[in-house]
Structures are given as C-alpha cells and as structure tokens.
Length: 102
Image (cartoon, rainbow, N blue to C red):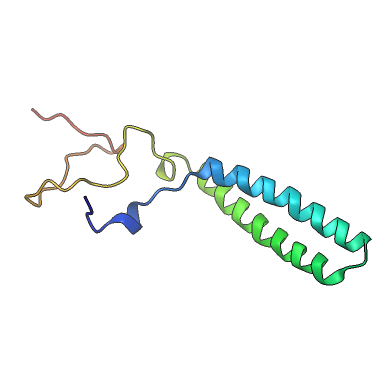
C-alpha cells in the first residue's frame, strides 16, 4: 500500500553500497594505473573521474552509516507509516518503536 511518503522514508542498503563502492574503487584505481602505464590518457582520465565519483559515494555512505539508526533502522522499524484507513497516526515512542497503550 502506498502512503505518499515513500521518498521521505526510503531506505538504502548502505552496507551493500559500501562494498560495491569499495569494489568500484579497486577497479577504478587499477584502470587508472594501467591506462597511464600503457599511454592512454583519455581512458586514464575517465577512470580517474570514476574514482572521484566512487570516492564521493563511499564518503556519503560512510557518513550515513556512522549516523546510526536514523539512517539504518532495525528490522523492528517499518520502512513507512502504514495507512490505518482512518487518517490516525501510529502511536510511537522516541526510538520509533510502537507503544502499547492498551
């Protein structure tokens, strides 16, 4: 069910993005070095630019991972507020867990 808040509450697999960035960084460094050694400055520049993009992405991912559960909520926190059908909000505590006020 869509609630309309998906762009605000979307989550990303940050650990997967970190490891994919690390893999991309290894290949970008390797490509840059190899193309410099074989005398292909255009390809070396392309790999160097890719290395800058990967480094920027990795720094952002690491920043979000360090921010903790705000960016990586646990399994007990749903990705969005479910629609109750009557417009009432969910009853949550400060940590984002459901309160039991019965």
